Length: 283
Image 1 (cartoon, one colour):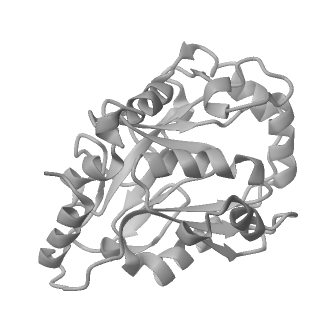
Image 2: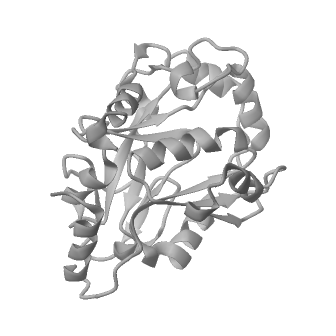
């Protein structure tokens, strides 16, 4: 029978020879700036699919993330660290690995506009990760979602408001994000991928090795919904926030370039996952 405790008990027999058990089987790390409006839905969703703890790096938000987390009553399972400055994305990831990597079997490194969607029968991310324990990491393919033709920020859930995405063949979908086992990681390499210790690597859902930030799109059992566009109003706010993994300035033209190709396919997979998680067997 599946349980987090069963998974953790197997950690004692890992190839590292270590006998220390991590406190968490699965955590998530994220760097944010002025995105407090999205915290609650993002955190609540990922808790439902099996994430136990979150490491959030506040990149100089006008309204401190730590205060927002406290107001939500989430401080027990969210660790907030301030990390001001430019081009801090990879540095935040490395800080997380160095200071908290020992405490989680797996850590997913994603952004606030990205939602991990496990498509296994139980819609449980730890259960899906179980079969990848011999690998350094699992690479998740992007699926970029568009604006659903919203100009202004709509009220309510972004998961319900933005349900149209790009075709799988849309070139930006070749980007991956990573869920890694910190004990097998050598260092954070880019915001999308990591360098691993000898003998370990990142693979996709079908165990095909991934060496860089780009790979063939594979979304049969898991996908990463990337709400890149949201509404035009929200994208303008995104431009003002800047980019945390490069000194390049984001341009408004990028919204139109992506949105023109990202309102093509109606994809409500994540909403079906949430419905499934409401059933008694998944509570």
